[in-house]
Image 1 (cartoon, rainbow, N blue to C red):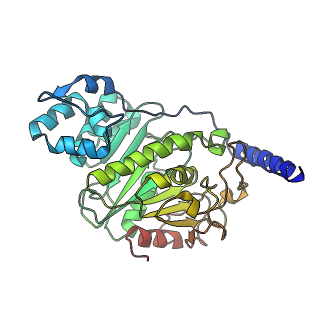
Image 2: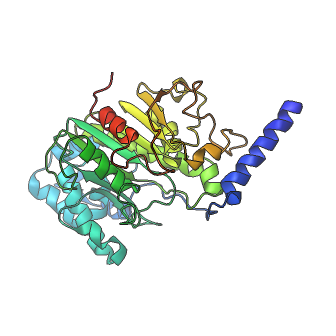
Image 3: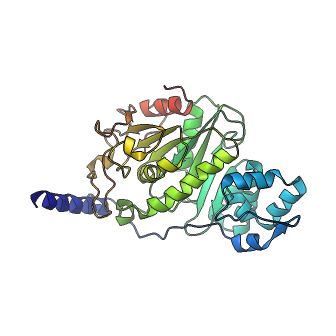
Length: 357
């Protein structure tokens, strides 16, 4: 009974901390965007050369890839013009086709907050305008890359804010650019400019807003995990190498829940509140699991508990968890892990290039 009481107190503390008593912003509850993209009903009703189209909700990415492989260029472009939102978000569809489809879909929204995503040098791999907007952007040449990394971010990221100028190394797009440049791929631009490593900034789920109850429970993470697993299956379907998942803050909860359903080569949690697992082995993945936390990262103040759905469990940087440690002694704050010159960025680049055994 005494132990149960201590558990209740700890859980209450977790809610209090995550709710903002330390001066953090309390967030509004978000409705998770799930299911196939807008325009799916019209896609299902259509055909090409007398053939039914693969259902975006149920067709495996490998089935989608095989379907497009059987079409000529004219048929592919017919689908692109008629259903840009579906083609742009269809895992397993050819990458250049998705980039072009998403330029059309972004422009069609007519919203100024998305306008920069339609620039011809950007490679938008997914775009969903529902809710606060979701997006995935490729930095490098994903079609020919020898190594692929995916940035999975945490709270306060969406299609309009993920590449904010105020966060050149701290937002998901900034992290992706910094990682690609650190691997020796040149400028880290979004265009397919060659290089062995491609990096995807993936905001493919509804993230919490602020650090409130949404960030303390697993509801949005579970929805995000299903989408992340399908996204990685889509990479596999188009012949991309097994990815490295770089999972920040609440994004590490998403990665923890998705781990057993992906073919990731490495899984890197940084600034993590927990991964919904007691140990790295309990994640059920064959990937190598890494963890990093800087000395001034406020995430250390969040209790590592999970009770009645609140909290995310064990600290991934603890010895008991069993993850490989990433040096982070010079990281500043909660979002400084990709700052140029840091130990963490150098280590991340080594992992991204597959140079660690």
